[in-house]
Length: 104
Image (cartoon, rainbow, N blue to C red; front, side, top):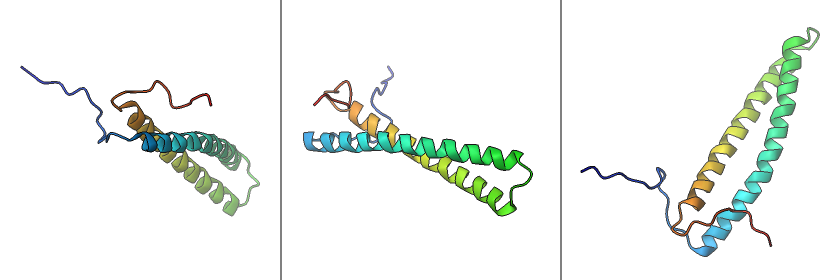
């Protein structure tokens, strides 16, 4: 007979109520920060597209647009990974609460 593990693939520890509240607050902050990061990525994607298509842009501006676009992609990616981990940490608690946003 095969035993199937149904838990999380992350090393999730059981949190106290205070730790859960702190994790929820961190997740709420991260959600707003991800909005800011995505807006910044959209801006640098536009600047990168301009650098690729407009012929009269100086080379240093062209290179900086590529650099900052790559940096913005890294920031969005790292924020998404952290967000996924925090959500998994909250959802894998013994008495899972259905959402991390609550009406106050």
